[in-house]
Length: 170
Image (tube, rainbow, N blue to C red; front, side, top):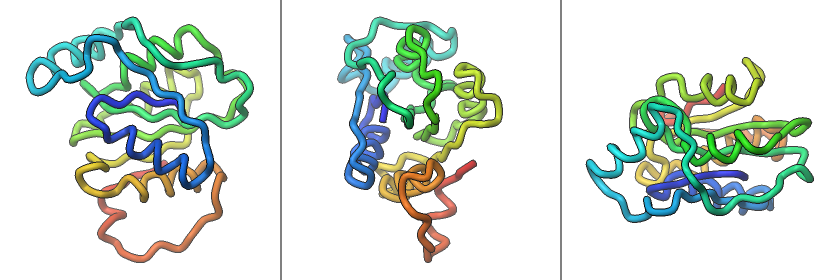
């Protein structure tokens, strides 16, 4: 699971995926942005996202040994994290089965399509989305859904329409 998390939503889902599947976690960070809140966070990180910037990052490693990679990202300005843009622009995930999950606060827009296009996957990327899974307590459901879509766990019958209304998949 390759992910970037600013507020903990994406991290919480990554940890759930680790518990569920035994996946290795690879966290990316943008130095100097830890602890940003409110308007400053949205101005700085939103600016990077809107203009497709590739900031300096820490974390990450070579993922060429993996045949399945799940990318976790917050959604800012309708697109995926600039930290992932930096990482993915310098490394190839060629040959790996790629899936993604998107954590957002209501502005998903075309983030899944933008990531799929960036990775040259077209309509072939499996993904799931949830609105603030840490706050809405849907991190486990989101992890379950993307793991099932990627074939990492068996499909389970889920009861309860309540959580389905907060999570989308493709």
